[in-house]
Picture 1 (cartoon, protein in one colour):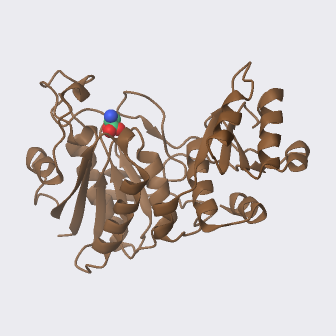
Picture 2: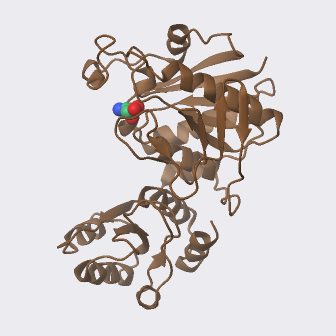
Length: 328
Ligand code: ASP
C-alpha cells in the first residue's frame, strides 16, 4: 500500500454546500473542511493506500497569498524528508490551481512526486468529482513514485497534466482542466496510470524556496481595443518591478500600450510580452528587441508572472531573464 500525505488547502474539493443540488453557489456557506474530513466523507481513508491527512488551510484558492505559497512549499519539503511517504497530494481550489502547481514546480526538487487536484463540484454536491479526483491523484502519486518520476503533476477528470501547460479552460465543466496545444501527459483509469508523453523541452529551473518570502511585485496588463496604457502607468507608479503584457494574438499591445511599456522599460521595469490567446508561442520581434521587451515563450500571462517574480526576487538581470524565458 502506498503511503501518501494529503494536504488540504480548501477549495471546492473541501466545500460544503447547502445540499446535493447546490452545485453552483456553495461558496455562499463559506464552509470548507480539512483534509481528514475530506477523507472521511469520500471514504478514501485506507481504500487505495495509507492516506495521511495534513491540515494546512481551508480557504478559497482566490485568497491564496504569497505567504501561503511559501508555507506550502516549506510543508512539502518537510514532508518529503519523511522517507516513509511515497508522495504528496494537495487538494486545492481550481480557480488558481494552475498557478500554485507551476510555482511549486519551480521551487521544489524533491524525492517524491507532488500531485495537485481539486474538484469542479463541491464535496457535498450530486455526482461530485471530489472523491474520484482525489483517488486518481493518489493513484498517480503512487505510480509516479514507483517509476521514479518525482515531478509536480495536476490530476483532474482522469487526466494527468504538466503544471507548465495546464490551465482551467471552463468555469464549470468536469473537464475544465486542459493543456492547450500539447494535451495531457497521461491518463488514469482506476489504478491503471499511463504516462503518454514527457514534458518538453525539459525541466524548468529550480529556484530557492526562500525567494517566495520576497517575491517581486509583477502585474499583468491585459490588452483590448482602446487600451490606452493607463493600467501600465499605474502599475509602474504602484512600484511594479515587472510587467507582463497579455497582448493580442501574436503577442503585441495597442500602440499606446507599447509606448507605455517602452517607458516602463526605460524606468527600469522588466517587461515580458505574452499573449491573451491561451496557446502558442510569443516569438521575439525586432520591435520588441529594440524596446527591450522580453518574449514570454508559450507561458500564459499568469505563469509568466510567477516566473518573472522569481527571477526578479533572485536578482537576475534582464539578459538573464530573457535567456530563462527562452529556455524554459
Ligand atoms: N472557488 C473555488 C476555489 O477555491 C473554485 C474551485 O475550487 O473549483 O478555487
